[in-house]
Length: 335
Image (tube, rainbow, N blue to C red; front, side):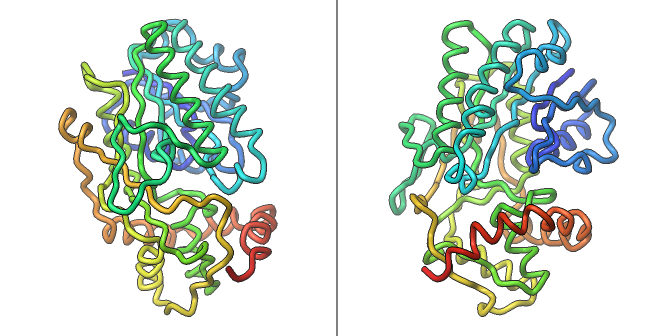
């Protein structure tokens, strides 16, 4: 199968490319703008074509996604950090909304057989205690990031309805694993603990998230890409066991040999949703996918990777990252 992967130098994208290459794809091309979150090192050792380009520029996309070249498109490219969207929504609208429409237009002209769009469980908004969200749940996004992803989902569905584009939307829960940028919670806390720094926890730390190991997510996306027929156009991808952030932080401290004194509660971010709990029964029942890596095992694998690759994350956490970190956490102070 010949596949174009947008955002393939990022975290989930590069792990997906590795899994796809291991499964014997005929041709893989990665299209990535290489923003701060993209890293060519994530593709080291892989026999893939890399094209640097901006998905929001139609000319750059059309030069890659020419008619008949690819059978499948897997669309990861996005601005994805909620905190950054609160500071400046504009890049999120350009990449996540305009960029997705550009990709859909090019995919329709090129005649692809399957367009897989990576969304997020955050489009559903917060759940109440004990509640879950299946694919029929209404959209209730609460941040510029989740609103931009909800808008992208609607554009994907419109392309399916209007033009018959063969699309499928995947809405995963919080991914974690190797090669994740340390602005995100688990690599931030892991690397801080390794450096002997405090772990900045928003508010009371009781926000609940469902954590999905990235390789399990990649397997689900490959299944959705290759399935000969799909009954529905959207599928949640989740482990199915939300846990409070403080529980996740406690596990990281144990792995790093640190005590709870390393936790530093900081002022919560505006509009921080308390619980996400996507139900992935549809994917499990129709495709037969199941997550294989539980949280303890996944966290051990993740910690092992960051311990073995300090040069990867130490370089990222220098320079502009320090200014970002101080802005996000240093200025917040105590809750």
